Amino acid sequence: EAGVAQSPRYKIIEKRQSVAFWCNPISGHATLYWYQQILGQGPKLLIQFQNNGVVDDSQLPKDRFSAERLKGVDSTLKIQPAKLEDSAVYLCASSFYSPLDEQFFGPGTRLTVL
Amino acid sequence: AQSVTQLGSHVSVSEGALVLLRCNYSSSVPPYLFWYVQYPNQGLQLLLKYTSAATLVKGINGFEAEFKKSETSFHLTKPSAHMSDAAEYFCAVSEGTGGFKTIFGAGTRLFVKA
Image (cartoon, rainbow over all chains, first blue to last red; front, side, top):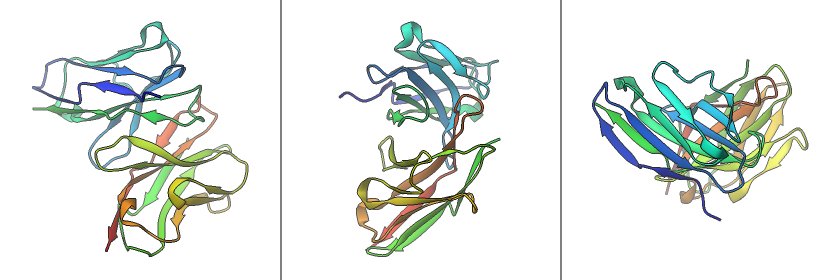
């Protein structure tokens, strides 16, 4: 079974630039999550989709972050414009139905904002 | 509101010694509790989860955790540490209010000395 795929693995941009991350979850998984993991901290949930609907985006900085999950499969997370404090690892995860099921994590995208 | 506190950002044990990683949670309703592990250069993976069945939960690689409601704790243990256990460990809580959002602790890095 293929795991959660993310790209790119690394990205370096300057502040005020835009960046986008892509995630392909495990086939058949209804729920997809985007987490932000700042160095030395645990993952923080940014947004949670169930199929193509948003379940929770209470911690997503909506003035600069946006995410979509087209057709309930792949997802894209965008930051526009980036700030220095956005430097972090962005993790995508998926689970069969809900957060009570095991979440399977991708390798993450390490973003550095200069 | 739910929250997770992991006591000790770093824990060091000798190979063969007991591993004890501490986790305390706060939840207004019966929670679901998880331990995830992140090996170097790998994504997070589930070690074990508590879903209100048996209070002693066994996971992969010889780890187990005990749910203690009176102490609001879910500590992770392993009787005998192995060099391959060196990793970062995250405790997480998910509860029914708010759509089962998962909250992660800050993590504990385990070092195993030969």
